[in-house]
Length: 113
Image 1 (spheres, rainbow, N blue to C red):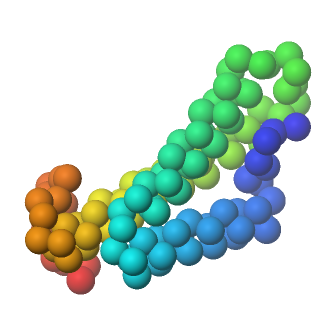
Image 2 (tube, rainbow, N blue to C red):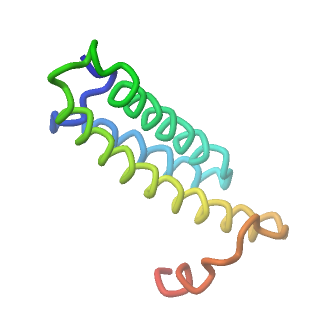
């Protein structure tokens, strides 16, 4: 059985709610470390699902579809948390008058906000 089965709608909503809470908390306290922690958790989940699919094939026989769908959702969550990390990092940099880690998405943030 996969560690986190992301084929269940309740689990997907729970993961999405926790990611949104991390983004909101990072935005409110103006610290990019909170979405970065969510990003690390999503990357670890992706690595675990990949290992389960490709390395431990004998013990997870029959769960290929579940693991593949879980990996797709992991990629989506990694994308969401990475963009939110860059966004909160930009907010933190403006708040503290520091240089942001990456300013390559300034054109993107200016169109959203």
